[in-house]
Length: 82
Image 1 (cartoon, rainbow, N blue to C red):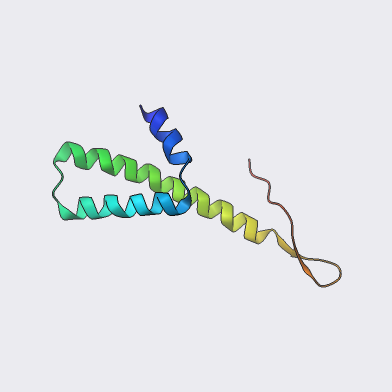
Image 2 (tube, one colour):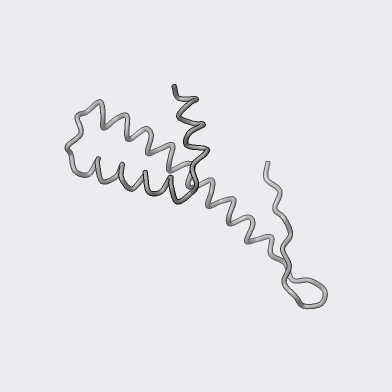
């Protein structure tokens, strides 16, 4: 089940993951969820947070690869990700 959830989260865009994470935070802050539900959504929230952080890091690396060319123009050098 976690593998399916990981694959589902990996397929989300940054914006989709952030929106879901915001909904989870609101649900947890409301205090309406029972303990088991709260633990489950907290765990999903932690995975969504990690996914968002990875997407932001990838974007940061791409931005850092922007270089100035010999003619003074700005170019983009593709970032390589492991």
